[in-house]
Length: 109
Length: 119
Image 1 (cartoon, rainbow over the protein chains, first blue to last red):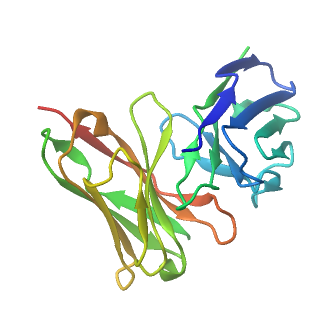
Image 2 (cartoon, helix red, strand yellow):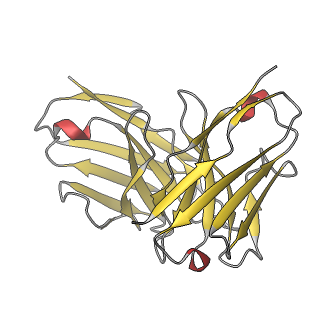
Image 3 (cartoon, rainbow over the protein chains, first blue to last red):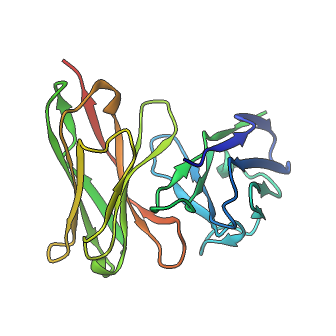
């Protein structure tokens, strides 16, 4: 099974900071990677799919990059509403199993 | 409005059964693959199961294989998860999620339903 490892597990940042979260797959997954944002008590929200495609309605300060085994989610200028937990998810393994990373909590500094 | 609404969660004893439902509205349910994802209290997201658009193909996480069954009724726009032989470690919020066309990602999520397995 493909394992997804996110780092860091938590990050403290201030409004306006640039934040970068990484996700590493245990084997190559091409560009079959998505990123989600989850706030406490709420369902996850899709931010990025296919590693770098921005989901409709998501602010452009969010961006994704990478392919193969190493991926990055970047928030270019952190806003108050961005404090949340972020998860990566792969969709490459057959027969279409999906695996999430362990999550990265973005906290207020 | 595109929406998924889960129901059927609750408290069940170890070894018991529960059936979750997920009612879809605002989109052509029969065109989409659907999934169940769970989240134990204070923990991360874990994919549980998926079903293709016509219900002919399913897959499961190893942790639930042989105990859980995913199904759908496209006439009723409803997704199901039958959970048998429940264990304490199955305690979680269960979300249904739509796999977006050509996205290989979950673009619509329900609000979740809590399942607690305890004596």
